[in-house]
Length: 202
Image (cartoon, rainbow, N blue to C red; front, side, top):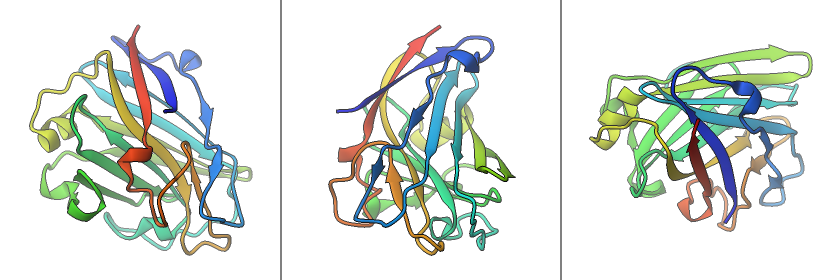
C-alpha cells in the first residue's frame, strides 16, 4: 500500500520540509492527464492543511454553491479518514472558484452532507494563473470533532486518504489520482484504494 509521510507541527508550519507528491495515475482510460501535485500536514490544536496545484488551464467553473456537483467542473479532491482506527471518511471536492462539496460516511452509498453534522466549515482559497490553478484547504479540528464525535488533536498517527484531480464535464474529461483505482468508474469513493498517511510529530 502506498504511503505518504508528512508532519504534525506544534507551533507553526514549515512548508519547506513538507513533502510534495504528484498524482501519478490516470484512471479508466481517460484521454487526458494533468500534472497535479499536493502536500498536506497537521498543526496541533488547529487542524489539517492541504495545498494542491495543477497545470490545467482550460477551466470549467459552473458550480457556485456549497454541495453543487463540483466534480463536473475543473476539480481537485482530498478524501481523508481523519481519525485513526475509524472507517468513516470525509470527501472535500473543490472547483477552481472555491465552490465545494463535503460529505461524511463509510462508503459511497451511506454518505451524509457534512453541513448536516456540523456548522464548522473548511476554509478554501483558490488561485488561477496562466500556468494552471491551485488551492489551499484548511480543515479545523472543530469540524472533525463534530463529524466523528471525538476529540481530535492532529498529533502523531497513521491515517488513510487519497488525492484526486477530475472533471466529468470539462473539455477534456480526466480522472487522476495519487493511488491507482482498481474499481469501476466512478470509483473515487473506494477506501480500499486509499493510501496510508503517516503523520510524524516535529
